Length: 97
Image (cartoon, rainbow, N blue to C red; front, side, top):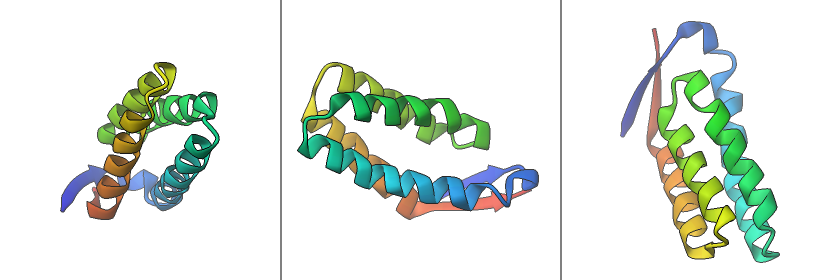
């Protein structure tokens, strides 16, 4: 279990943010099926830009890795990072302070 403390002012926003990241995992798989590296790059870029704003630095790190792997057109690396994101989301426990 991964515990992350998040500012309570974000309590209404975080569940939707996390749900959208779950959708991103599916979108990445769909994009890879069509070798759509640009879409994966954009998804990673957006994660990189938004994760830290919610106090979820790991999502920012994974997003950066996805963006870079998409730029290099490395499907195995993309799959590994998407799986890492899914595991992170499954094990995440947000505490509001």
